[in-house]
Image 1: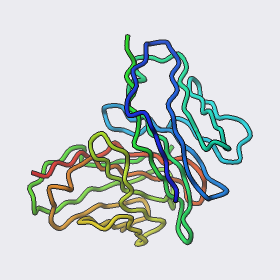
Image 2 (image 1 turned 60 degrees about the horizontal axis):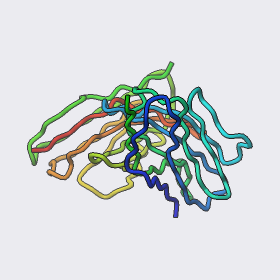
Image 3 (image 1 turned 90 degrees about the vertical axis):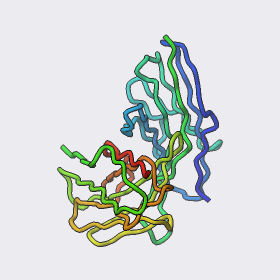
Image 4 (image 1 turned 135 degrees about the vertical axis):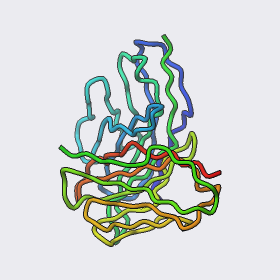
Amino acid sequence: AQKITQTQPGMFVQEKEAVTLDCTYDTSDPSYGLFWYKQPSSGEMIFLIYQGSYDQQNATEGRYSLNFQKARKSANLVISASQLGDSAMYFCAMRHRPQGSNYQLIWGAGTKLIIKP
Amino acid sequence: SQTIHQWPATLVQPVGSPLSLECTVEGTSNPNLYWYRQAAGRGLQLLFYSVGIGQISSEVPQNLSASRPQDRQFILSSKKLLLSDSGFYLCAWSHRGRNTEAFFGQGTRLTVV
């Protein structure tokens, strides 16, 4: 069965340090996509980065990069030079397509990241 | 550019009252539409998704229903709210048939009292 696991319920990181948020997934689909979203206290879900299962290179978007290790089924988010504004909940999600159905997103439980000044 | 609007932002309703949350998308056509619920401090739970007008798939049996009367309008409803319906509800859309991200509305914080 498809599943997303985020093992870190919370993390404290000093400002300007890099931070890695863990995400492992389980799927039997040969083709899938992995996403990271940021949810600040306002509640809005903000898309950060996407990695396709067939992409050869790790995705990068500004200070965000995705450490994709397909054999280990992990898709960790790396934030370089953390800022106070990075404090938020972070969710890992996977897109899959159940048989006879349309694409759906499966979500992890999230990691609460707090950046300390 | 595409935008998604969801309202109201907050709502306090008594137990047993009806519910109607509305979501509209602008700047795109034939989107996939989704309703999610997020309990406090938890991940997202998919409630309904729709691939077209009148086409609704329910993921979790519950006290809620969804309708899509127009291509870019998605409505979440209940005839009688329960205390357990309290939560943060998010509407989202994605491009049809493409492996792309979903875009979310601002969310509605529903408290049933």
